[in-house]
Image: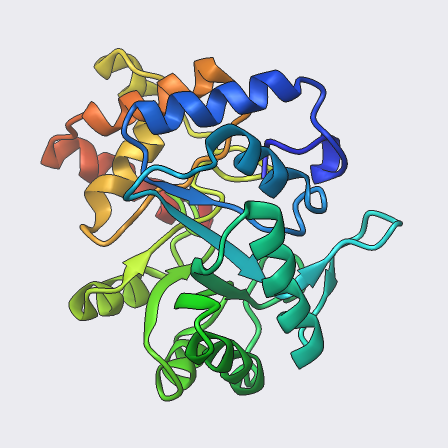
Length: 268
């Protein structure tokens, strides 16, 4: 998402820098890239193709459908069977793939919150495209536990991507349920998104560990559950290296307890 231009629109200010971030990430061992053809639109996928195609074996590119970017740069739903089918072909073309590794159906609610409502029609369209060999696996994004169950009655769900971080923990029960099923949980806005995480506790823990607050926030997610996969977006090599270093942080039970208190404090 960060590789496109300002507002996730148009080309980046530094296209060579965007390519460098992707190449260094993969060289460092990253094997999971999260994208969408409505980032840009088309721009991010085209940069991924430029940087990494032909793709190394074992690299999983996860894209998402359900949105579109009209010329006014807004974010709109695109959930009809035709829009979803067109979206799959757009992703295939711009990424240079014959089949997409994973496609998340992204439920477009109000803002970045979930909303109940049936997603059966959209998931069925993706399941049909999967049977045709254009999609290997199906995931969900911005969904409720009930919507996950509804989708699972139609097809196998391999991952769920929702808004979750140290301060925003509405999905605790869902994460644990998915972990029991061996399904990946992929938190978007792991660092708070458009309103970055701010906490004196987080700052104090980071200072004690000789790390940045954002590194501690990422490390907490990795400690939270074994099924969590991280997708912290960046267009900066410096931030990429900081994010990767977060995976080497070890948090003690006492530190984890202190960090767990952040969510409770933000409710008051």
